[in-house]
Amino acid sequence: MGRKRREKIQFENIEVIDAGAKGVSVAKAPDGKVIFIPNVVPGDVVDIQTMKKKRAYYEGRATKIHKYSEYRTEPVCQHFGSCGGCKWQNMEYDRQLFYKNREVFNNLTRIGKIELPEFEPILGSEKQFYYRNKMEFSFSNSRWMTEEEINSDKEIDNSNALGFHIPRMWDKILDITHCWLQEDPSNAIRNEVRDFANKHNLEFFNPREHSGLLRTLMLRTASTGEIMVLIQFFDDNKEQRELLLDHLADVFPQITSLQYVVNQKANDTIYDQDVVLYKGRDYILEEMEGLQFSINAKSFYQTNSAQAYELYKITRDFAGLTGEELVYDLYTGTGTIAQFVSKKAKKVVGVEAVPEAIEDAKENAKRNNITNCEFYVGDMKDVFNEEFIATHGQPDVIITDPPRDGMHKDVVAQILNIAPKRVVYVSCNSATQARDLALMDEMYKVIRVRPVDMFPQTHHVENVVLLEKR
Image (cartoon, rainbow, N blue to C red; front, side):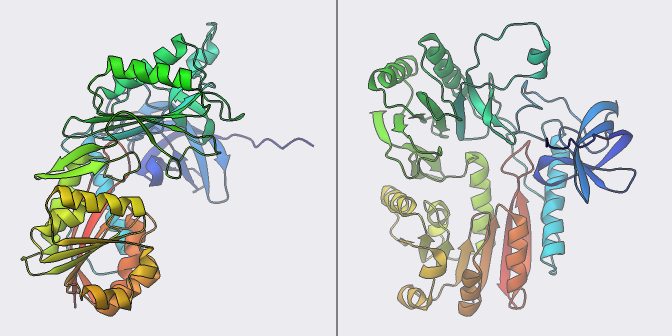
């Protein structure tokens, strides 16, 4: 028997009342259930067609807008609505900040259930476009067709695409003409790669059959003006590979680092692959307050350079360093925060699970002539133990910047065990941050809170919290 098709329901004149998780907006159906709708703004009044019906909610799309929200603005990107990258581009920036700030407040109060001071104002980004220093694009020979293309009589003679995955469709790529997230020459390089590949019949990747030459394109730029280009190939075809790479080097002589990967495994990740330097050097340099950080193809670095500087200044301010403190920087990555605060600390000890990141941290410390930072590699919950503390000393201040999952409960327990005077908790996920703060609430009081917007036009938000011993 075939699958039973669920009936789609039409709701009319429904007011969008809130901005929800993952960048979608929220309305209430006449039966009381929540409706999640993309590409609308709180305050819009719309007709909605449901796409999915669950026990507690619907997922739908707006088919008609009867009234526009006062907070609505015209999206600048021609791909808005198809691309899932900038879901709040139709919302005024001040309102974006309002909802980000509120999300942090709600998570810390509802999940953490802790006493909070008055929030310091959320720090907005001076740049609302062209702020990213890293972009990754995918090739596909199965381009996503817009409704206009499907409904037109025009014959589609090229189904190749270089761009972003359509949300929830792993094998469909939206061909991007102009992206507003990364400064030029990002768009020029991407478009040149696609046009040259089409002209010379270089085969775009087929994600279903796992075949083709061109797989992904990564572009990294730095505030210093340096540029990294990395192309991931599937087929190991030396002649075609060098044809494309030589062309890029000729057209864009300003490329600092031109690299490639031949990846024939099932997924696109390059972290277990050999990266080959084709021209230039295998890293680019980022600069912050006189410090230089080398960024290689596998490095983690905050993707909004200008706002990262503001985030680190807030972190250093919250730490309240006088030059006499021993600081532990947990989840140190490539040691950027550790080195940024080092000139105001007696000594900084950084810990990170990724060996390549620690090697970068050590190299960067050498480059910056920093002698009071030490870096160690290992899984945080295993390394950060009694023996480690006995070897390196009792910290006065701990700075922690964990991944989205937050800190492992054993790491939280160890922080409580050694009980430093202050803990500065930087988080990209205020929900898991709130969970960890609740575990620390008996011993530590939250003194300061400041959200930071690293990603304008999206729902993502960072948050910095200062805890002091009760």
